[in-house]
Image 1: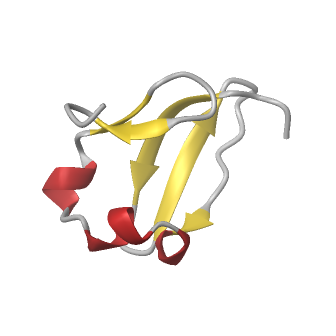
Image 2: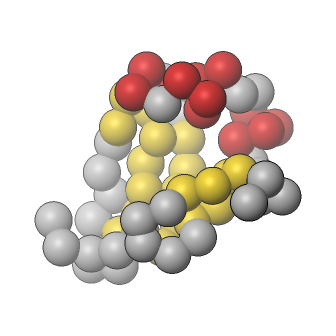
Length: 60
């Protein structure tokens, strides 16, 4: 895995960073308590903010 995160999406249990090398890597939301507690609507506002940060837009 050598690509930087360029986007991110979620399902009910995982975060999936989309990497610049074309890979998508699943991570359990349990590893990220803030994301796990967020609603689907709140997660839609999370964004990639340059490697390696993924942040809630508006909370920088």
